[in-house]
Length: 630
Ligand code: B12
Ligand code: SF4
Image 1 (tube, helix red, strand yellow):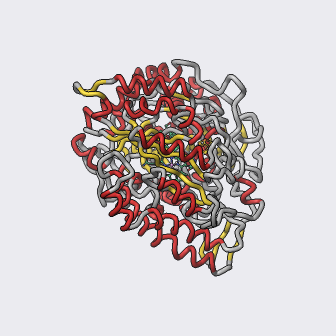
Image 2 (spheres, helix red, strand yellow):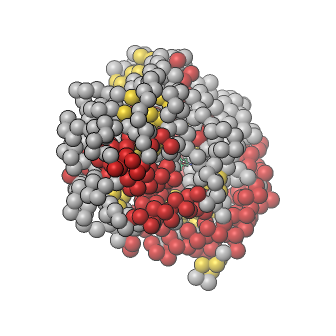
Image 3 (cartoon, helix red, strand yellow):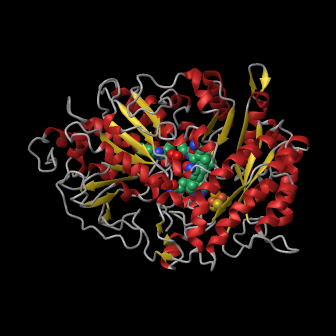
């Protein structure tokens, strides 16, 4: 199921709304001495091709954005912990500035959900009287917010709130809580006091539990789909988040100081930056267009130039990755960004001599932009990751074909931009075809010939929030287990074959390894040294080295799975993984984030009070009757 869309014309925040919220919060922040820890969940079992370097050497933008927002509105006591760098971190042991934090936040992708749950469970070990307010967010929570709550009285744990949106939703929640927080009251107590009052229902983008029992959600209230920020220039500056990063360590506790500015580049040499969000295509396996409510959101060229320049001046970072879904999506807006960056001077040189950056695009849009690829190069673009998927367009049609892909790759190469293809392997695609460009190896060979410097081959896999998601379960395509091993969330990274109707799925798994081995190998490394595909010095050989390292990890992690798939003992799922906890929208309608099969919660009328009243009468009101202990 795709995320529903808000009413037409009501998808976006009004211009300036985030700016005013930031201003309002800044004016009250000094009255609240909040300490916040934001953790990024990361399951190390996902470390393999094609993300082996980027996964740990690029501090993720999501937690940085949330940290920037906190810092920007005045909560400077904020620390960002990446499980990528700190495997042993335990929220229950965390002290920031000598005290248990007021807020513990966790961000997670779907594939890191086991770690996300473990972090929340650990935070719940803190005595409820001192426990921080626990807020979960990020790509996992956006689609499956119920997964951070428990309904089991014998196993109570869970976040207090799940944010299914972006910065604006979090800051709105904080504004409401701080406006009614009593002196010396813990923020969690404030939250408990208001959550049964209906006040939170006015903030679209939240899911919270209504219950009287600690850690056991009786029902989940879904306040609906967030309004999106249209003008990305309103976002807090990304330079702020970097100064909050916890240094890499093996300790369970936090260090006394964040990572010094001088060491940021060493651990995160590439900075991911939000430049644009959204995509005009509608691939049925992709949740992105629906998440963005079919809107395309952009930053101005001037703001992007400023972000790159400040990150360089303050931390020495010179490599950037655009967190775009499809950077060339809108020709005019792209050109505006490219022209501004191409004109930009940094320390007396053109921007392109200082910075190198890359992002994601499609074959169709490269050709739409073919007259302007030199401009892209002048703007500092050195590599483009291209959603080719299947050159013959058998899997999906989005304007690509063998000829068009070849032309797009050649044109990029001519301009000094490395084409980085992203392929999708599927049930009907064989490993090799004679005389036709349909086989996986045939396509990899062609791509290399026309200049591919890196390769991504993923198996088509159910993605939460996509049109095809439920069908892959109800049709029995998705596996429960193979050869006695259960499919776990981390295996949904598209490196594992976990959904297939192929008679010999083990072969699909081996095909992926074979394609990588064909592309990344010692012979090709040697050729890349003497006849590189890239004009960027040693980039081709460097990618071969990273690729070979990644391939050893891919084989180590997925070969055993291939053998299990070959055993033939495959159990399949038939039910969509929906919430077991009843859910409802604020007015008793179906919750926006409930998948089919979710029990519907009944709307019980509560005595809704204004924030002021709630605060005044909190002592005697039934709304805030929260038992402090289990
Ligand atoms: C860059 C990127 C990567 C990089 C990440 C590198 C890095 N360390 O940052 C690389 C290339 C390694 C990568 C890999 C993968 N990726 Co990726 N990637 C992206 C991409 C394009 C941008 C991510 C980003 O920086 N966004 C910008 C930030 C600001 O947005 P954000 O993280 O969503 O955070 C916002 C909100 O979610 C929210 N939020 C986030 N955290 C929190 C926490 C709290 C407490 C709160 C309140 C709010 C909140 O506020 C933030 C600010 O607006 C996104 C798509 C997209 N446009 O977001 C996909 C995306 C994150 N990737 C995705 C996937 C699936 C993968 C892979 C599994 C490969 C695959 N099958 O496609 C691998 C996993 C690798 C691994 N081991 O982790 C999915 C995740 C889906 C899901 N439901 O979890 C996404 C969303 C794309 C999609 N299909 O929709 N990816
Ligand atoms: S082109 Fe890429 S981002 Fe756009 S819908 Fe298709 S897969 Fe998603």
